[in-house]
Image (cartoon, rainbow, N blue to C red; front, side):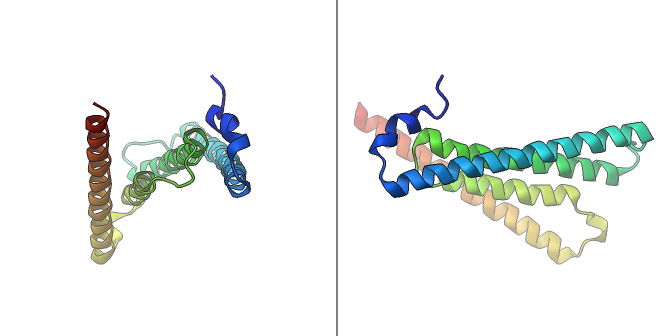
Length: 158
């Protein structure tokens, strides 16, 4: 399998701006990959340090909140990188709305994981809840629209 095969195959047919976009996307993908590796190393160091010190105790939820928050950062970064690098393979010049909404939803959910609910203002929790519901609704609507478009395209092809 050729890495970025569609991009390589179509390179000659791209105009200057499209080539510029492809190079920028490639550089962003590389930079995000470096950040992911650094974040992963940080998570590993933290977990091993907690294990070595005996602090990875289920009775201390703040430790788990911190570790899971760090893990969520890695997962969000992976999804973001997947979206960016996917632009090269798919040959699209626009980031899909569904991917952006998914990344935003993951970021809000990460905040729910790391937040200290007992010490947080009710308005903040209400705002995060509203954001989660709104993003979930947008994600559902975009997914349904994509599904309807695929069905229409399948019917037209038949």
